[in-house]
Amino acid sequence: MTSHETACMLNASDQDAHVQIMIYFSDKDPVGPYRVTVPANRTKHLRFNDLDDPAPIPRGMDYASVIEADVPIVVQHTRLDSRQNANALLTTIAYSASE
Amino acid sequence: MTSHETACMLNASDQDAHVQIMIYFSDKDPVGPYRVTVPANRTKHLRFNDLDDPAPIPRGMDYASVIEADVPIVVQHTRLDSRQNANALLTTIAYSASE
Amino acid sequence: MTSHETACMLNASDQDAHVQIMIYFSDKDPVGPYRVTVPANRTKHLRFNDLDDPAPIPRGMDYASVIEADVPIVVQHTRLDSRQNANALLTTIAYSASE
Amino acid sequence: MTSHETACMLNASDQDAHVQIMIYFSDKDPVGPYRVTVPANRTKHLRFNDLDDPAPIPRGMDYASVIEADVPIVVQHTRLDSRQNANALLTTIAYSASE
Image (tube, rainbow over all chains, first blue to last red; front, side, top):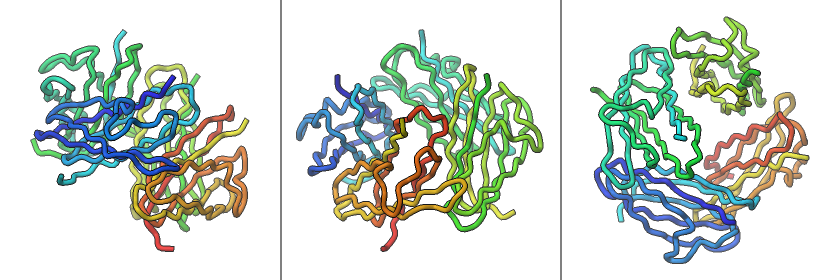
């Protein structure tokens, strides 16, 4: 029984979006960046449990995420909760950055 | 058993709003624009399943939508989920554009 | 069995907030403005069904609301749904305006 | 059976965030400020029922909160509702302020 955190990302521009994700915790250093590409004029469904580079995200631990992209994208989080009471906080800050 | 995606649009201005909707997918080209008019000082309830010009929106496939209007409108999506697990991501960017 | 739309308004300023509410429909002219005062440094819980001046809000009809105030306020809508499928769209635009 | 209001705060900056929380009511003066620190590059999970300085938050009474910090933070409220119908309105305004 695990949480299924997902981020649905929309890139409505004509350029591929290079996305970086940092994961923050309450009692240890942040992990990341995780890197994902959302092709031009496409959506991408990201499952946080599938992220494993540079390291898998610890299960059963609250975390917050910051998402950055080099072209404007739209991000919506969805969460299929497990029975755990303590759920993750997912926050999104999407802005342009040159890589 | 299908999803009933709807967009409730409010045009609180004194001019009719001409609305264009683009639909984005994860693995194929966007479809659209779909065209809708929201009269001045009125709300409009749009059912995505009713859209069929230029083409019906594929059922059972995740999608994201971008909504544009030539006068500022307010859009709120509501969704009556079907039993499918994979639901659509609906995103809204409403801005002024001259047609 | 009716919907219980409420708007929770916070006025964190040191001046009373004079609030005007317009109600929009899909097939008839807007109704309003309804006038409410949120005292300085107070919250106010508004039930839309209690509004009756200039006219009660029709029951069982979808509507959207625009809320304006002469000092910045924060508005959050809550909705206890009745069994009706068609629910109201409540939209909020709060901005400063001199009366 | 009480409500469990929590605020999940993310400080993605390299400086500790000093947070002040004011609590507003419908019929009495605001209470606060409550003071919390969110360390640099960390999340913090705050339970409103744990706040007791300068005074515990009254149980069973609607309230709204304003949260300020001296470095930008991201705040997300979660609420595990009790059986009470009347729930708290939690609003968040986070901005920089020098202390």
